[in-house]
Amino acid sequence: MGRSFGASPIFIILTIMAQKNVFPILLDGVRQVVTATTDTWNGDASEMRVDSTSTIAVGSGTVPGTLLNIACNTNDDVVINISPDPYGSNNFNGITLTNKGDHATLMWTGSSWLILTSSAGGTAVA
Image 1 (cartoon, helix red, strand yellow):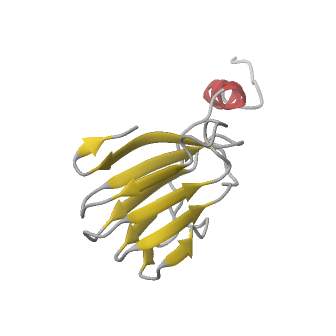
Image 2 (image 1 turned 120 degrees about the horizontal axis):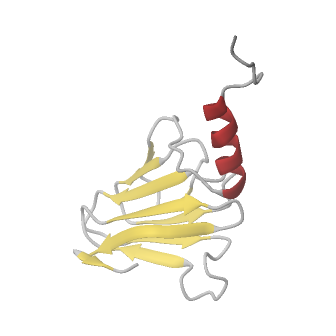
């Protein structure tokens, strides 16, 4: 006769890991398409496509691990302002995408955004 744990051992292990780690999460909202000169991340989608010169405000996330990919679909500047500042120094709180195909990927840690990757003009900048 087997002993019953009440919950599967895998569930218990994942619960313990989740208390000490942040797992990446893709939000299932519809891709946010930006055509305005200023816009704010809606908090529902993990994808933003920017189709014109724009300044994007990315505020706090709600779920630790939330991924956000912002892709430039224009050859005009796309300025991304990140708040709160990822590194607390106001030196890395903005990314400028300059060419079609440039992108930035961020992850919400629960207290700030971590810049995972970015490329601008074909060169990695973070």
